[in-house]
Image 1: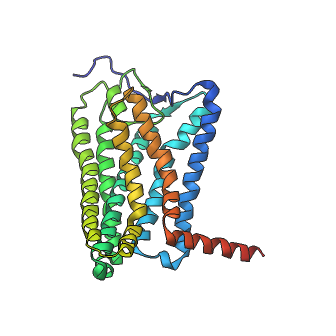
Image 2: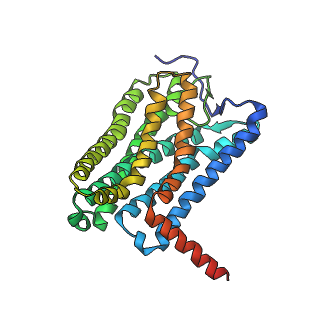
Image 3: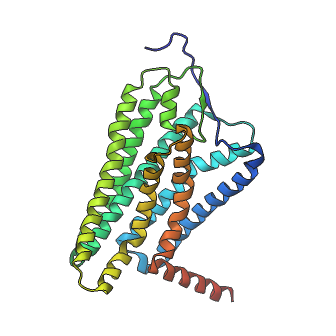
Length: 313
């Protein structure tokens, strides 16, 4: 039942990270450096794919969208967090909070679905190499990416519309560095059973189904690799999916370690650690993983630097 003395909330107060005042400068520099590395690293990946014709393949088409999503996902929360660390006012408007929830869910879902699409691309490349060009045609790649965006938009819009129907009373303090949907529902003074049901069903579908697709794809890739008689063939097969497998391991490994660890601490602190991993650490490491473990990216990067040196001379 709703409370009788309900009042409308025009803004929320973000408490931010539990950092001591004397440590604010150090953490601000770390997070700012991580965010700039994320933006510049992923933009470099986009530039290399754009300029090098050899990277105009389905795998790098998906990687291009993953890099764009990583930049967008990190930009939803980190700039606001950095600003709040430098100013005394840590408030965010109601509309700004709702918008932050929408875009956080949107880019998080797109990131998740793109990893599943990329695993399918690696499965086709390794298990059906002779039919790769016919299966992964340009139209099929565009449809897979468009489907990821459409499903993510639908999921984010559903959560946001339901959140907009929720009423908030006097408590407008968010113990987080951004507007987290579960925390907002805890602050609500109205019935949120429908919201929680949608989070459980739609959220599980967006996470579990792509993860299942990734596991099935790599399971079949593993079976195919074991059938290859030569060590050279095995190494060549692994090299085509090593970078993506590393990113998937980082993405889902964060969830498993931080959510299912036996030595769990405060739930809010744990949620903030997970969010920092998603919004700062993982998007920052992805360009390094793809550049250091990918021969084509390293080759394109070397050509770009050599061309710049020749142009400078």
